[in-house]
Length: 129
Image (cartoon, rainbow, N blue to C red):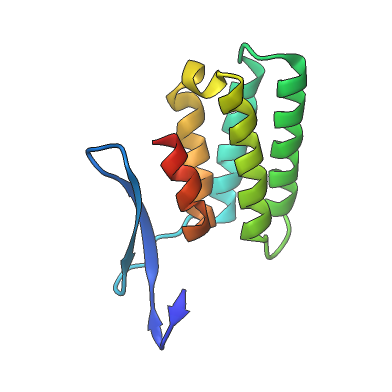
């Protein structure tokens, strides 16, 4: 990101107290490519198939993943759209108890997509901490 003539980057980290933070740096760029976020979507899709959740929850979560994937495949994906769909996906599975049940197999790829989104994904990362 370029602000005030300086290239800035962000990095998501997790503190020892479980808080997600975004750190800014003027010297290094930390950003996933959409391809890496797409790989995380595929991982989430595989995890979703094995979850103990209602068909209604799995279906709605699958639609959210479809929409994320569709957005990531266009030449200039809208990070706001991806954020909204990822929040919906996470909310559905959290409310169903699936995030707690599956643990890292869901949280890790959600974090990867949120990292691609950038600072907009910080709130989502805080809820997963």
